[in-house]
Length: 387
Image (cartoon, rainbow, N blue to C red; front, side, top):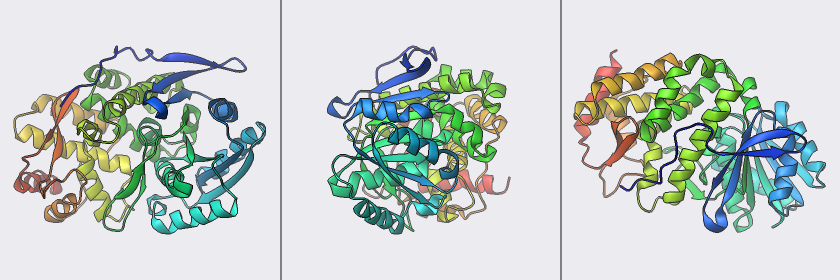
């Protein structure tokens, strides 16, 4: 599997962008030809969303999609700054939670856009966490054969992962993210200040995806996280701006190399996710947050790799220790290993009936392994179940 171009490990390597008046943000560019777009990361930059949107595109109408948790906090200011730029604004608030990312709510939103007289000058604005971003992005990808999309992620998980890269979709009852599309946003605006309003569990959940980037792509970044746990847990805005910008740059590198998963390289972003999606599906998306499931899935994947002697026990322990000190779970829910295996067979990386997993070789490097025996998976799950 080819590696993407390397960048320096300094967490400030991305450009600084000055907003008016006297407000700065870090800018990361996702270079995809005609589908290229900027990501802006900064503290208290939500008030500049209208300015950034109208600078990036010719839009006269915005439909803001948010949820019942985020809407009361940030919808009013978002509407106001868009209207201040002369845009007509409509808004829809959906119930918070993973179960909203479904066909019935997609149909409601499609009908709402009809009622709002949405047209090709309409931009869909996703204001919320990963569920809102995926759902609103799916609406933008499918309504009128495609509308422009702006992502304003308000959860850490969405800021470092789901808002970047163009994957949008909804869940089926039997499989997560099985219906969807590739639909790149036109702009991503990340205000780290929104993290201060997150429930602690939601914030901690997002840290799993942050750790993931260190394991799959950047050992020095992983070490940086190990050395800055107190600041991370204290939601320090300067540290978080650097961390989120680095995660976005790393993900942008992967997306630029394999935008539509045609070479297989982009699959490395799913490290831990094959296990995680099975845990989420079997618990009906209700008992585990996505990041919590990913943390457990990463632990399972690392232990499987260690059992194959392809990942050192010391580095496996470092991953587990970092996840735990950040407050993330590392042991799976009380599920039958055979049920987990059966659910994993629905994963999109399955080819010709063969289960394939992203497994670590060392911190900063993973690979897609295609010869995983089902017995290896049940073996790594069974002892964990009794811990």
